Image (cartoon, rainbow over all chains, first blue to last red):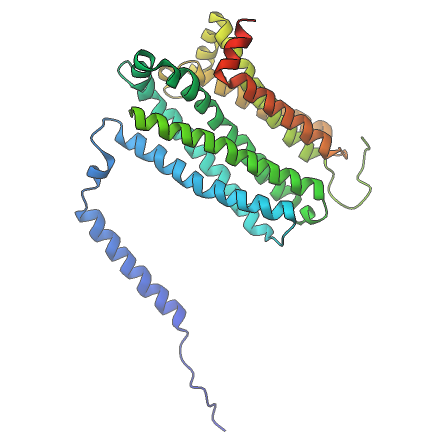
Length: 196
Length: 121
């Protein structure tokens, strides 16, 4: 008796190929025609600002995911260890990128006619209190994110059996998010007042 | 502290080492900021240290040196503590509590009004 279900080639790979091709064509059109420099702005240090802003924006996403993972670790809700490990590595890498790009944009911030000079003349507390605290708070995020990744990778599924360890990792993720939010919020506020 | 884990689980020493190293690194960051504000020569030393390896360090000031000492303390203390504790079973609650206290102290030292208070006393 013949098979009642006709055999068809698996459509998934064909669909992905079509979507990928359309995506590449669309991206090429945008890159060739969009006035991208208009989005960067007129400043001499626009690329640094865009890079740091993008890194910080990505870090907002990954550290927020980290916060959600912290909740799952703390409540011992079922978790996927591979997902936690990969997520924590990405979080640490983006923390580093954000700090490195922050160092790069700190140069025009401190330049003779940069925002630092402006704030010291017009509103010294903006620099002396808020910006100085922001620049240090940002540095907390990297070692916190690295130790989370290290513990998740080294101990892996032992987290299920070690309540203290999973709780500590959860607290570290919350701390990383906390220091990131301080740095991000103050950075955004300072940029709004005077950008590089 | 005992030498071996009572079960087949990995020992907790490496976790304690990693935790406490973060606390020590961040505490060093806080101390370097207070000392920089208190001493011009220490601030110059921080600048010189940053100049050794960070591109553009001259333009970001002594912040580069403070980053450097914090990074060195974090990584070196992690390596040393790891070697000392790697085969030991350590109470992680105590190690984490110590770490969180160090992070709290570092944060307090780095809050500029507190830095100023510490420098003037």
